[in-house]
Length: 438
Image (cartoon, rainbow, N blue to C red; front, side, top):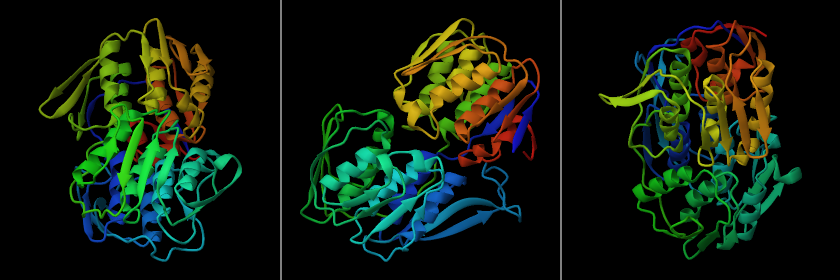
């Protein structure tokens, strides 16, 4: 699909979809809970559907609640109903699983978190995914699981297709985490290891620390006992635990909210973002602090987040804790006066694409000076020219380029725009794009 955007002012109120990070964690925790759980207003996207399919394959029973809801931002089905809840009856390790590989689609979060959970099974569980997923390495995670007694197999460089087979015997392992998802996976699985086992994890490298804080918040809410170093360099988790059923709603996604928030800031229109929780632990909440530092006016008003435009200024921004923000921050840099440097984010290269290289290339295709650096980008503000750019199949690249098009000198075509459905169905309609078949 090609999204065609003619430059215009983006304004109005936008209800933000549910958080992908929360939705996937809640799904997997509920799937590993022997009892009924309920998740209200989950994100309904390609990634979360992939996670739900994996949970069903592991033995969980998931029933959908669909209603006519004018407020829920999820896309409507053919009858006009939207997904407003899941009722989940979990499973337990050892439940029979399909012999064929469980397909995580494009969802790296599902792959790494479910891979660790499936290691509790005493029979082989196989995983695969789309072309991008088959290029993403689980090597450090597989090495750690092997050190805990799990049998593992993988393709070249630890990439899918993968398989794991318990039992999980515990022990002490080292787990460098260029992506926090490796550690989140083990933290969620280790409490359910057999009674008497103890899992100890040394973490010599940890990127994306806020996502570990989010995972630990779930363990705390479930009453899970664990020990940790203050700097997250060590964890100790006893096995033999049981998760309680989950209930509650999914908060809005700050990662997704960055795109309409950024759109209002770069196009000169004020926007109000609905459904976000200022107290939530999502790491990408920092986007709005960075946006304020660049000159936009950001404030919470009546429980909603307002973004009012102001002259944007360049600066230097450390994105180590929030690598998913690199594409939209690069767009802000293209709009800002002067130079913007995004640094300390080498792990942006191991996402759905090498986002550092792709953003440098696509900004350059529209005449914006963007210098690729080993751990980030250097961008000189300017006016993008009209033209055609490519998402490379990456949802955050696609949506960031859509925001860039709002202040271009003429219409911009974005190929592969359907990638946005991975986390934000309905984004192009809300942005005012004209979508055509490629």
